[in-house]
Image (cartoon, rainbow, N blue to C red; front, side, top):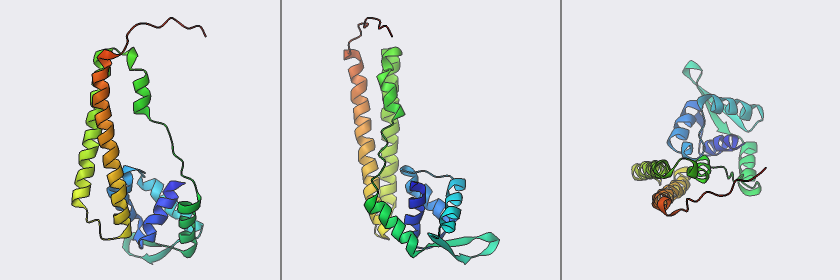
Length: 182
């Protein structure tokens, strides 16, 4: 459901074509909510069918600019203020940490160091976005800056944790637990 609301939020900032929305997704929202071209265009059609957006301009080669309707603004506000977010707790990278004991200390350390590198790379990317973006051009950018900062801090913390965890591997108890019957 959030792709729907992400599109509404982008259109609340001003009219845009599907192509323009996809470019904005790729530069900003993709860090937290990626969308493919087919997903976005399909959602735009559904939003129009539901009366939440409308075609405000048609251009060459079938280009359509969409605008949010009052009903769409009301839906966006309802979603922001009344609907509790789905805070998914799945994390495949951390799930693997539970089972690192099955691959031996060298592989466990290597995995954790790769995790640190992934998060260091993400932090560097977000620092570049932060440096290269004019954050005062719109409400979307001003509030988007808060999201980029959250991602940067998260990536930094995860990288630090992964380096620390790699140093802990040698200290972990390696005695075998008795076999359990099921």
